Length: 297
View: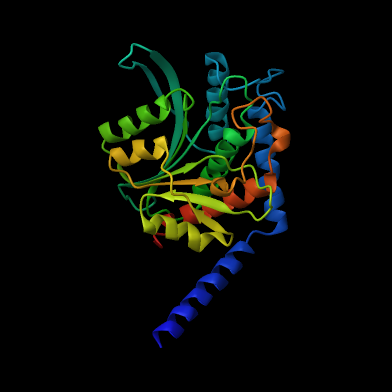
């Protein structure tokens, strides 16, 4: 009897995932793709980001400032207030770091003091346009921010943040997490998007690295695509966890090698991005954020 009940439960979950996967219509997918093509195009130098200015990468101080300004303008354009977390610090070896994290807060509608944080980094390795790594993560987070802001009911607050200098000792991430702790934000979970523009086998699979089973389960229930569990921790996740935050990282199928071979190289271009996969993964993350807004989990 127990085995029968278990099989019924698995069947229910499978059917729920299939129905959720079909919830994104072709028309909705096309709309997401059009928006994200524009974002990735500007961030990678495929299109001008400001006037006639095109980025070659997002690694130098000037390129990062232009990118930060673009993100602030974009957030303002979708009705959100852009905020800046600037820093100028030195490490123990005397190396100086100067940069700006761009973020926005989307308030709860019920006065809650809980925060769910969605993150991605906007800088690149030197000489890389950084399409898959990580213009796609930025495009995902901007889409999710826009959709969360449209919700009539939010039982938690949201922060969507774009880290600077992730390629430089993850300093932007470190500084923002430090700010959250110092300002005593009640963060219930942090969600990090990276490497979400490559899907060579076209199965739309995602990979998760989660600090707890409930976060992982939320994505599995909302996905409707193959979900793989990552078993190797990342430095960013360690930064979050070290300060007591529950965290999950959403990526392409890294463990099975289904990721861009051009990461951190000059060939990590706009033309290598699988925008259908980016749209699919963005929609999954949005559905999870929506479930948190409704406090389903």
